[in-house]
Image (tube, rainbow, N blue to C red; front, top):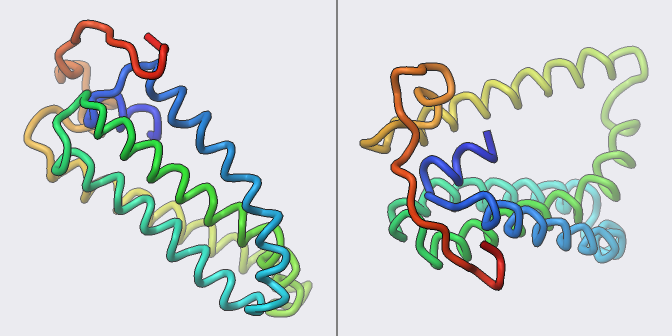
Length: 166
């Protein structure tokens, strides 16, 4: 869904989407700073900050179509910034706090069920966010375009260059 939303709702080209997702990979370097924060802040607080940053990035993605016209430079920069924020938040908290904290908060016999319920809750939240976000757009929504051949994709536009990419 992360690929359909930027192209169908935000109006980015394939090159712009690739550039935005490629820039997000640089956020993995934040994981190095996360190890120092885990000691200083504690695992629980670091996880809370990581989740807050990730949810802020995802909420920002939903605001982009309201703030910038589809296909604009602002939409591209906003997409890159929001995905980078989400990646930095995850990379800075999960590897150093979550994996170390997991054995402390669940017994080995309960860990599988805990992870299963956590994964189910995460997927239900993702589905709810997708339904809420896509229902707020007047044109063809990502969900309808994905599952209904009757719904046409966004109107094609002439390719343009952003940072030398076409």
